[in-house]
Amino acid sequence: MQEDRRLAVLRAIVEDYVSTEEPVGSKALVERHGLGVSPATVRNDMAVLEEEGYITQPHTSAGRVPTDKGYRLFVDRLTTVKPLSSAEKRAISSFLDGAVDLDDVVQRSVRLLSQLTRQVAVVQYPTLSSSTVRHVELVALAPERLLVVLILSTGRVEQRLVELAAPLADDDLAGLRSRLLLVATGQRIADAVAGLRGIVPVDPAAAAQPGAEATGAVVEALCEAMSDHRSDHRVAVGGAANLARYGDSFDSAVRPLLEALEEHVVLLKLLGEAGSSGMVTVRIGAEGPYEELASTSVVSTGYGPEDQSLAALGIVGPTRMDYPGTMAAVRAVARYVTRILDEA
Image (cartoon, rainbow, N blue to C red; front, top):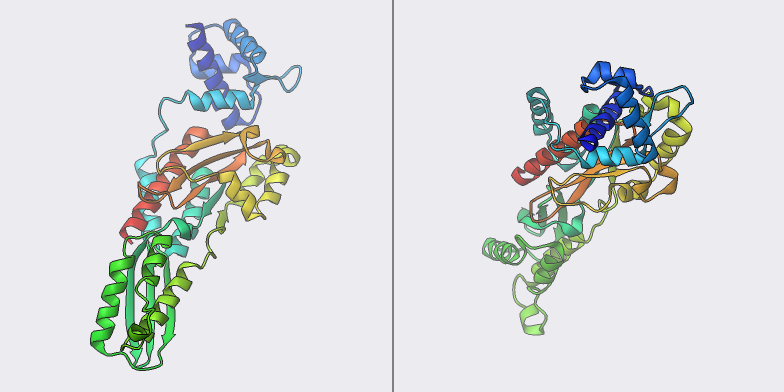
């Protein structure tokens, strides 16, 4: 009973401190949360929580504020993630459903996430190496010119122009398209490249056959497109202006975070490895990878098909944040992005 009551006191302190940004006293807790005990009992519970390192007293006459350890216990003991309202769900759906391509999906997601959480949002672009080939298309633009189109499971589309030494007959073009689809569709990038290279004629007799030159040129264009790693370390960032709400902790939390926003590699490491979609990871304070960001928390998750997470998204901000609401928003946006990529 005492442990449950102290957990309730800690939960109340966290909620009040996040909402009021002021240290919390025992009298205010009793008045606002209906704990069913006297302020004296709450003070005793607060003394125990402080002794165990879950809360601290910033000033002699002030109330208490949570420590990183207190936030950690609060998050770990959440029985359910706060559900989003119907209005929030509709807003997410309508905002993301209007996206026209992958870049638009990422940019819309980062703006939406920063608005929902009032934090700094970070969305990693899908990594090419973990994606699969969804479709390959060949379009004859002229007798000796082809447009090669590569569509990946991330929603990314690559196009390459291929100039041929000789015209390619319609039947040969259809046959080449069929072979490309057979060896590449549904394959991860590395396997698709190996399969494509396997259809290029190597012995002199086969290389002299009609269409062999075109096969080699198209395969080379596709392999070059698949080896393009421009997006593997790209992130989109939104909502940096939200840090203005934390002016009281500028030097300890905001300044280091503003500097980190300039370094995409740092942000990727903050997000961590993309876990499976739906699994939200919360790293609080010193649990993160950078000592200078010890006043920062990160709430993140992976997005993409169930059998593979393509990338990560989440928020970063000072440890004083609405963890239940933030976790719900991060999970919801990741699910919608996953759905959009699946349906793209």
